[in-house]
Length: 338
Image (cartoon, rainbow, N blue to C red; front, side, top):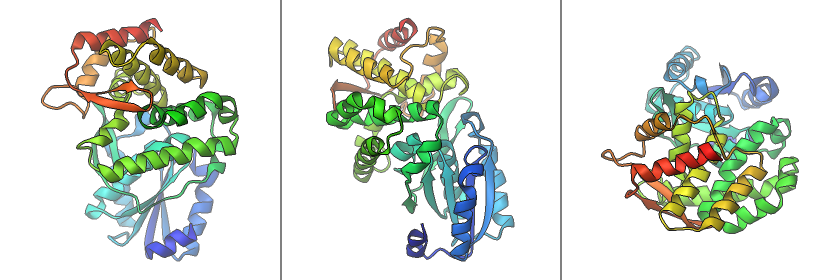
């Protein structure tokens, strides 16, 4: 981190944004490093949980930034998982119309997905990440050792995004995770390094080609149109983001089969692999109408038409806008039935 700070010529004031889970574990070390680099540091601590991903905190933090004497040369450091990274990035994008920020992701989900790419934002009761901005981090610092303290459920949820990268872009990554799930779940850092590194490579390449999601970047939304609807319909309390994505991937696989793009073998291979990581592939109590209504508010909807990312083989996806509501309901009912 000192080398990164030196390269950024960071000076003056900085803010460390973290949450109530991560802060007690790692904030002191990060603050000390920043202070040793000559920065005056203020801390902003968010109560942990997706339900706190709200715009009101951004206003509070911007006030704290001003009170700390931060200006356009200042630095925001996001220390935590995807919620912290998204919110700190949005605060950095908004404060004085944009200041630099660094991502230090502490969850597998943030390391393989949300810390790379520059999407920032907060949730609205009607939809996930509806309020936000594109704001690229100046650096992403990943330390796999922090995963040792990660609760097992959080680890499993984050791995859903790595599996997604395999489905959309690299069948060999999917196969590796399929064969190494015991070592990965056991937090073997050598085994974990493969999906983390390859996921970062895949996402960085996609974002470099299409930063603002006019084309290929939408590939990364595989499973997310369903997943975001599931999260919103459950008020962000039933499932972690990665768990909702896992459900969404299974639904997307069923939809892909319904569109004639893949066969039963693809659906079962994906379903079994997701389940092998302890991720959900069924929600028997799903309120189908509520999920469908939430999906219609997703930010990927264009002129009232939902856009779906569907698989045509393992390692490759396509985009479809000719999906009927009846086909979506079939995919959702598959989740109800398991």
